Length: 396
Image 1 (cartoon, helix red, strand yellow):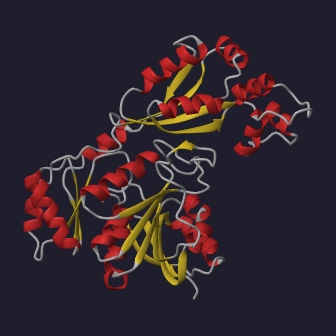
Image 2: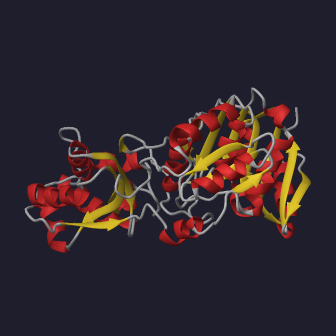
Image 3: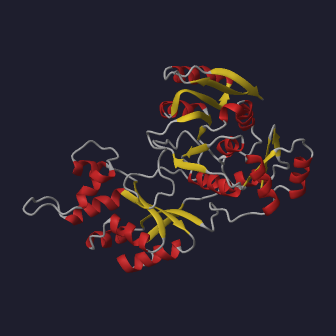
């Protein structure tokens, strides 16, 4: 079914046609919004303007989601909550902004608003145009000045990364799968398809800043591993942890998997994977990585929505804790592979297959030890240009 669908997509659209990319900067914007000055902060406190009220304003005027995130020192806010300085759970902190019961006393609302505007910023995700104008209008309407709020853009595209992908001259033929992107010449793609008998399955990816366009040895290792287990994949559920472009989950669907789920902590990658699934007419379910650590993985737009997020989660954290997969594949580096081990292994059915790449030889022992403690006996499966793929089964 995957092969027929892929060729139908090629015939109907052509290999070079570019769909509106849902991660494109013209369609998606993201920024941090804070008060611009001490004067603006004083006006916010005087007006008892809560961060939550500003978030509501943005949602009513076009924002898809607004998350309240911490910035600066949390000493005063932690003290007000009666705990040691740390990042407090957002619901606990927001309780400071609720009016105390009659006769209960407590600090006036202005004092708590003052605390919040010292330690909080708004993370705004916007679909479409108009974000800057909306921020200026919010400043005028709520604080009396178009310059009351400062916008710090969070880029949704790494131009150098995307440029490097565009310079990848030819599609990558990886066994039964031809991985092409939207800047490849259509005739090159068609010639490569025609040169093989039987023709390979085509996977066409949008050009963008996610990892996984088939040119890296670790991506090749993973796709070859999936193909070598094509019979075992049929009708099975596959988890791609750290999905990037979605190339591994989408490849597993082409090879006959009944369902595939991708997880990532980069909003740009998740949007790119979503676009790639749509382009290839494959159903790839996508989630934000739970408990992600932005220090361990290079992200264009790190995304870890909090419980206090307002509006729509572009990608909810997941998958659900009761979901189990027959196969899990992850192409990351050693630190994130070790950190996500418990969550990844916990999502795999007893007896399920696990494949890990993104590793150099010297990193293998530590990763093997970590997964062995969780009941997965990993062995070196294959290598490519100094990179290693490990695979094994979860204990039944």
